[in-house]
Image (cartoon, rainbow, N blue to C red; front, side, top):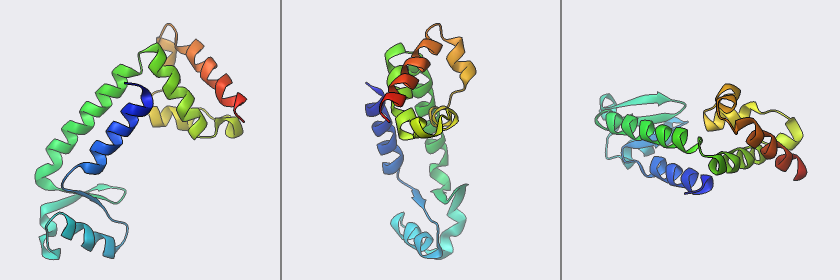
Length: 138
């Protein structure tokens, strides 16, 4: 599976997770509660994960397990030379590296640091190749 496919797979898992909703207003909160089959006075059955994300309390462990699995899949895949090149190239372009010259948003998105890259025998070569590619697309 390539980076883009894995990214889409993980996004779908998060989007399709039952018992989870996003609310940035009272109206969205009310609709979110209805979506998961709760009434307004059932607020004790949910809690906030922060950033507008609400989840049923009894689904929290399954969500945590899913999130841990996704993180582990990403971490393992990023140790593959081809996957790392694709991931860095995609995210550098996505975060407008050619304009900003800033690696940090890409690293944050991938959950890595420059030290993680340096630990890989091929890491710095792959990073430089991805940077050149992102700069050539400007």
